[in-house]
Structure formats: structure tokens, C-alpha cells
Length: 126
Image (cartoon, rainbow, N blue to C red):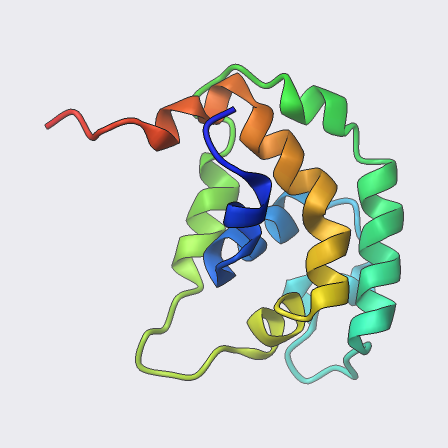
């Protein structure tokens, strides 16, 4: 394990990465791509849906992922959503809610345990 799952969920990019890994398993109304301009569920509703999605997400397979490129699409989605000159967007705000973070814990545990993500904790080869 390269990191503490709690550390992954401590910041907005780690939470967004975990969200991205679950996004294709979420009902359409919970996908980030349809949130703009739509009625938003509250944190409790998002947490409940994420808990159900994480329960059926094949997290054992995710935690056993050994391909070092497997997480790059979710990582790119998380990093690509950064707008440092603006306040956190609505997705980052809702992902920061303690109930939602708690629902993402199983995903963070799987990512932190995955051999394919072990290189994240290594120094960069220049």
C-alpha cells in the first residue's frame, strides 16, 4: 500500500479521483457530466448512492490492479477539473462533505492497495 486511504480522501483531487472511478457505475443523475444546470442531490443522497455503487463496484478487482496506467483516466479527470483561480466547484464541494467522503473510503482503500498505483509514492524518474 503506497498511502493511507484517509490521506487520499483528505484533498479534493483524491476525492475526485475516487468519484471518477465510480462514475460509470452511478445513475445518470449522479454523473458529473449532467450536474451542470441540473437539480443537485444533497450530500446525504450522494453518499447513499455512492455507498451502493461502491458496494457493487468490483473493488476487489480495483485493488488488485497491477497495470500502472489503469488509473490514469481517473487521475486525468481529477487533475483536469482543477481551476486554482476559482473557488471549489459544486462537485468538489459535495465531495468534501464528511458523509460523502465516508462513502468513498472503500474506493480509496482499493486504490491505495492497488499495485498499479504503487508508483505514485515513488520519486519521479527524471
